[in-house]
Figure 1 (tube, rainbow, N blue to C red):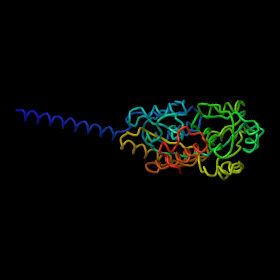
Figure 2 (figure 1 turned 60 degrees about the vertical axis):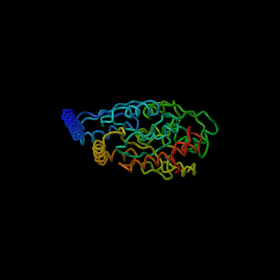
Figure 3 (figure 1 turned 180 degrees about the vertical axis):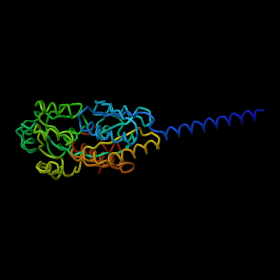
Figure 4 (figure 1 turned 90 degrees about the horizontal axis):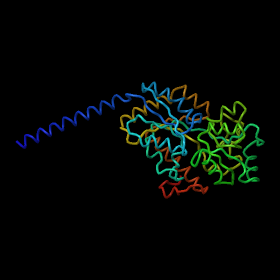
Length: 338
């Protein structure tokens, strides 16, 4: 009797497990069954936000669902990034992130980086400029440097917080020379540009994607491009190595954009998203957006995406360590020197 009862219990358990597995498999096969929420951890109008809103319609067509973008700025992107990191690993929470998260442990902003998320795609990499209001007296970055060194701590630099693009570029410059300025923090490039146009800021390191429209309109001017050669989009703007030759050690370098989901998201859902993003990024219309905004298409998935993230973190973290701006040594965190 006991053996018969146990066998019935075992059979029931197997049936329930099989049914649960079948239901789970069906749910994965039907993904996505509802809308996807995407977080941009910066304010509206910045380079990451502009990129996300340009790319998303192409992804929606391939997934046959809506992707609703929410801006969650704050904490150099920590707040918005942590939203996706702590939500269920079901593929319905997506992050459009910039490069900042790779520096969180270095700057003690958070105890995680993109290693806690899965890169659906590393989308593209931007060109960095040093920009100033069009009526600035400086003709190039050399003039800015001379003014800053003659008046230490007086010039106002637009910033996005510790680990943001401006503070990282400043750390690189200070690793090879001295640029003593006053940082004024904003929640994204959009508000900072508004402040610069109102002459509340003197200059700002910024992605070409954010500054290009105002440069075309004659409201901002580029003083240097963060490269060792002129950019195709702005051939008249001198590379920063013309003023700081030692910067060549950190180049090529630039901000990048990626799409991420929770690391524990099922493999089948990761693959579905990766395929959709790979196809969307390759679309001529989005490639045109990247070209117009001075960005390079990367479209990396899998091991290539992971390798890119590791190298970028290594180069940037050690530049900050050499500049004395890293709060935690990359060596202590196990980040190898490039």
